Amino acid sequence: MHPVLIDLGFATVHTYGVFIALAFLGGVGWTWLEARRKGLPADCIPDVAFAVFVGALVGARVLYVLLYPSYFLEHPLEILQFWEGGMVFSGGAVLGGWLGWRVARRRQQPVLPWLDAVAPGLALGETIGRLGCFSAGCCYGQLCGMPWAVTFTDPRSLAVPLNMPLHPTQLYHSLSGLLTFGILLALRDRLTRPGSLMGLFLVLFSLSRFGVEFFRADFRGQLGPFSVTQAVYALFLGLGLFLMTNKRSVRS
Figure (cartoon, rainbow, N blue to C red):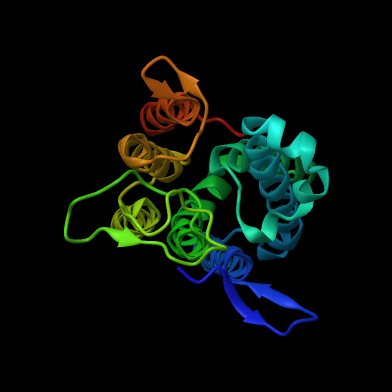
């Protein structure tokens, strides 16, 4: 709704970038608390968090750029302007997760307990970060006739079309992240098998993302009746079910 938080003329603070930073800090902070609860060495968090942050940033932006190749071929300098909005969460999840896993392996840490420690922080980060999407107008929804429809009027907004009621899909994402966060906190002491809490996060997150995708209007690639994002989250759903049902001890 307000893409620019502060405009000083010589410097601009984008609301999207502020919320992404808050999402990262909130996610890392909660992971630190979870690591302490589980007796995991919290001194590993800075290394893992930095790897995940860089991977998530690069992966999310690269996948977004790949979805709009013709535009970025004409405006190559805008590839680096991620703070204005335009990232795909699934791309960030894949690359960020892989880099975080590599760092954990290098530090000789048990991966599954760390995944469980990270899971609530991911849900919290999704809750906060999507407010940045709402501010920038990215990840916008289809035309909507419901009472909770939102209308983007700022010409700097990424939402299309402006001045028309749209599904607030960014808020759908944020609310589903908050609900997932609450469920994870409620069940974290019951799901004791390593990896099961992350499995539950992936199942809940994938189902909510798959559903909200039907209300989105921005282009995410197409695979028949589904978007590329839905195909990716179908794979995440399978991984989540595996982690929840797997009875073998997997360290790496």
